Structures are given as C-alpha cells and as structure tokens.
Image (cartoon, rainbow, N blue to C red; front, side):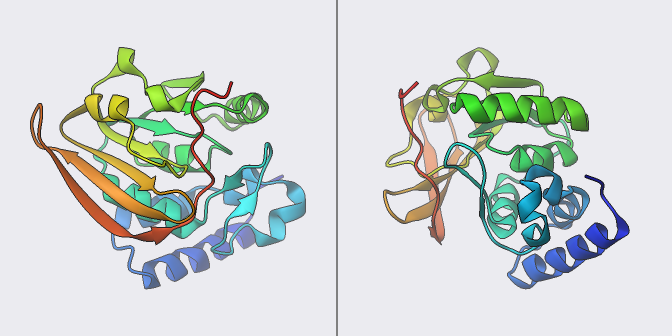
Length: 213
C-alpha cells in the first residue's frame, strides 16, 4: 500500500474536521496530517481510514478515533525530546503521532498477536520507538522512568499507582478512567507527593487489562 496524493488530500480534510472539534495545537494537527493512517489498518478498511472513527484491528482491539488521538496528544503538551510512555501500542498509530512530534517513545503492548504484527510494521515503515515491549502496561516501565508524559490508550477502572510514581515532577499522565464510559483524565505531578487531577469529558475505550498474560 502506498501513500498517495489522494490519501494526503483525505488527511487534510480529516485535520479540518478535528480542528473544528476544538483541537488547537498546530503541531498535533500537523502530526495527524503527516501520519498515513490507512497503512495502520486492514486494507479492507482503507476507504474508511480518514473518517473520524475508531475501527477494529487484531486481537479484538481498535485503532482509536483520530479526534481521540489528537485530544490525548494535545493534553500531553509534548516538547521535542520529551520521554513519553505509551500504554497500549495497538496498531501503532498513536505511537507514530508521538514520534512525529519528536518525542522519545517507550511503548508497551500486552496482546502478543498485536505486538508481533506491529513490530513487523514498525520495522517496515521505519518507525523507531526507543523501546517496544511486550508486557503489562499497568506496571509501567520503572527502569526508564521518570517520564515527561504517560499516555494510556485503554479504559482503566482506576489510575495505576505505578504510573503516577513514574512521572517526572511537572509530568502529565493522560488516562481514560472508568468502566463502561471513561472520563478523560489528566494528572499533573506537582511535587513528590502532590498531584493535580483534571477531567475532560466522556470517551469510550477498550478496557485496560491487568496481568492477563
């Protein structure tokens, strides 16, 4: 599959749709514009790749809605060179957006089928996260902490304490919290023991699973 002028035109339209939904960060919009989402999806879904919708991928997971990807990414307020931990690599689309923003990305996937598939895809496409790990995202990645940002791309019943402890002072955790519907939540680490919690409305994600490997 190629990335054609037609695909680029469709991405421009997608960015217009997302910007109209109040995504304002130009770098985030440019990242969405730059990542060929159709290549992350089954070719049978190619015609739907630039709709602002989530779609199924392997292992009963989904590729997130572009608006959701943009929304979470904007909340992270990434600067080039920031260390970002991503919990739930999935198709790798969110990873690619983070890499486009020149973040140093450490990403964890717990579904072996997806991990293998996305590993091959990253190599083929030249996407280079600092580390791509098969494992339990609930535990984070203590050996690489602290992080400027942590992004969780699955719904969590509560905020994993391990992730809070791996934030830098001033760092941000962006996580959808809840069982059926999730509230998009941002936690900012103010000091060793002090965290500020902000909430940004309702979203729907697949569940974040703990220790099911």
